[in-house]
Length: 244
Image (cartoon, rainbow, N blue to C red):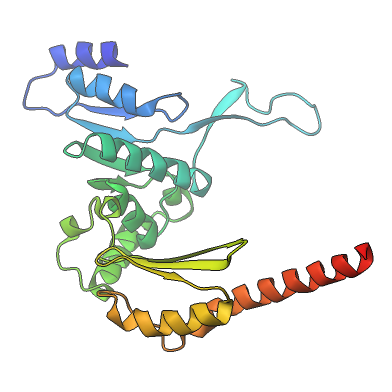
């Protein structure tokens, strides 16, 4: 790939951009992206189709004359978004043309958030020739609904952490159940012997954690812990009776 881009770059005037369209059927897409950029590519197009084979159920032979064919459409969108995300993470300043299964404005926004600078629509046009205009309209509506005035604010936003993050974890051990409530702005730790104590102490400490959106009844979040704990205790009692 790098050799091809190098040859093209040497023949194309400097004012004409060279965009390298890369296949996802490789072991290390990021390395290949880096090599074509070093060879002179001005931007990247991610991704090309995925290689596939279809067997004809009547003949039990490959359905395509060329044996293999390119899979496109909605099925490859997660693969394409992954490729865009990984390359953007490795090369934050590179321009990426995202493509692969885009059918709606929401799909387009997903690519932009992953790091694409622009998007391309292909397969969707076969069923809906007006798809590009519709996707553009839907994207504008989504941006307006989110209060985003400049589409550039969306590009690569998936690589930035949310302002705050709340996580709840628990584990069972000899000392009973432990829970930790943490926020990126102010970590706090709760330890309790029982689930009920966890709920009580969580309600007490939650208002003190800056930047955390407090749930009106935090005990609801622990209902599943209670049910699992009760089930475990009942099973333990039954086992103990059988063993005795």
